[in-house]
Length: 281
Image (cartoon, rainbow, N blue to C red; front, top):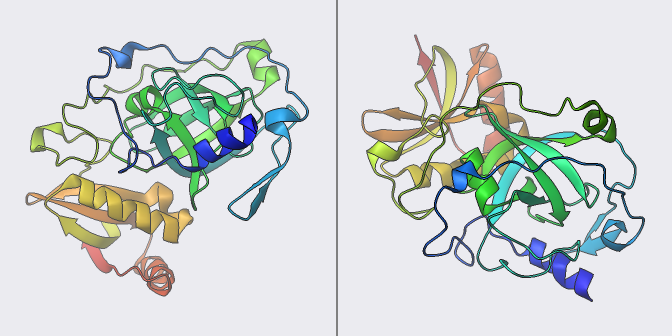
């Protein structure tokens, strides 16, 4: 029963949504919390690594030391689950560098990259989830802060760190990460112009783009980015929010030519997402 409850805990995470979020006064200097340090830990057969079913979907966790990489949406979970058991039986600490994943071995380690700003973190996977379409990992509050995805669901790249990499010691980050965003308003609240960062606001490069909407509030653009990404995961690396004329414009691109942009627009239209063509010179 403990495992079932832990799985449902992972399933219920909202990425900072209405039923979850940060504590009123989180600790200071969370950006200085070190990444998880990979070490060789045995993968249990059974327990948190046995096949399971949630919301009608069947999952078969990995039980071998295999490489694994994927792209998708990251969410995060916070105070609602802080201090409660994870699927591993460990107590969830939203201020540690941990994560939940539907199928990676428990325990294991993963490198998570935010392609919008180049930031990378290393987390220890000790929980199951998320169980939402398009989402591939649930991060702890601190992991989400260091990756600069506290505003909500955001595209990421996830890669498992194998035993061979741990033994060789070649899992360390290769370069100094970009500056860290430090939130001064709760996630989901309207963002002042001065809090916009490179991860969510970019300058439009030349080329062919699709535009999905223009908003006064950054969080509204981020919400639409989640919807577009869920409609077509292949667009994840291309989605960005561009700040122009005082508005946050959600765009995908640049596409190599107009035909490819129109083809993407047609696919999205079939999913109920409208867009307009923008050519930047």
